[in-house]
Image (tube, rainbow, N blue to C red; front, side, top):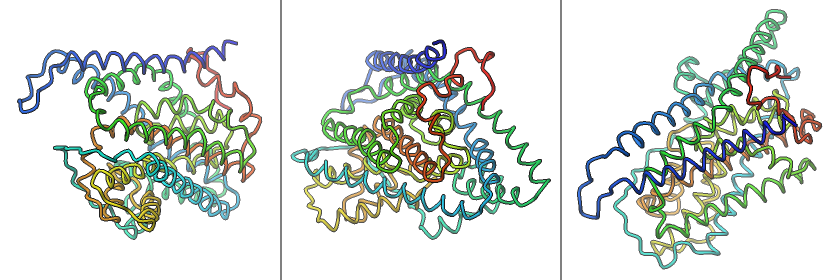
Length: 446
């Protein structure tokens, strides 16, 4: 019973931290003087200087940095451990085809669902939005360059810059080399397994500090944005959120049930903490340590599978972003009075799906992908300025959807490879010890 209370306590504390952060942030927002149209911005007061730009900024940045600190070592060490334990090299190729194929399929479904819902509900019809915001589209890398740069010329530089695709490739090659080195490889593999245990211990520590980090993140966001940015974009905002929830609670469970026969309710229940992390951080990469622990300790996927599928999904799986692009494309077309043909919509689906790989790891990837999509169907890229005001709020929800998709694909692939412990998956209290509040009494991971 104490373990169950521990889990409920952790989840409850994260939710309380989010709620308190939202309330405190809104209070700070309405206590902050704002410039009227045509007036210069007022001098920053106590709230802006010491809270929004001080305490909240420092607390949220420390939390995000502590999560990002673990991403590169966790991905590299975990992936090396998983790869060097594969006895059959052909397994890696099969894993790659299954994983990338499923990610592309879910992305295509996501943007198709978004376009259909936007066409039915017409969020941009009759709106005459004026905006001073502009968007300069950064140049997306050519797909050929992406593939040519998969192998890092300097692995240390790739790790320092956080180039996830290059890190994944190097880790896989390094793991294969360890597997082929006999006794020397076995000693190195044991060392990496010990490293992995230490890193997962750090993940556990951060999970127990999460409520404080979540509070600072939410307080800073709503102290800066408030709810005033919604305004005339409420229909667009609500539609994107609705489609994101449909994809998370209908598409994923249906695919999971159809492909594995496992309980979707158990899956959704065990994704709560990871989804809350993703919602508050708005970063799939920052949430990666928590996602990886969730799929291995709670959902029962073996590390040989999860160490490959989860980092790859955090890099190329962008279902939430695809949904935003689908709704945004239709919204911008309706605002500008442009009629798109069936072939245009098919082009949007194909472009957004393939762009999820072609722009992997690029900063601001969501807006870059949207710019590519708008260019493809001859819509003004300046239309992105219409939706930028609410994009930060939407980013929170779509990141939670992205990591849910990563986890669903991991479970499906693990099940197909016979690498899923269904007893762990079906145990509602699996891995409760990983989340106990009293860390000194936590038992070692199994």
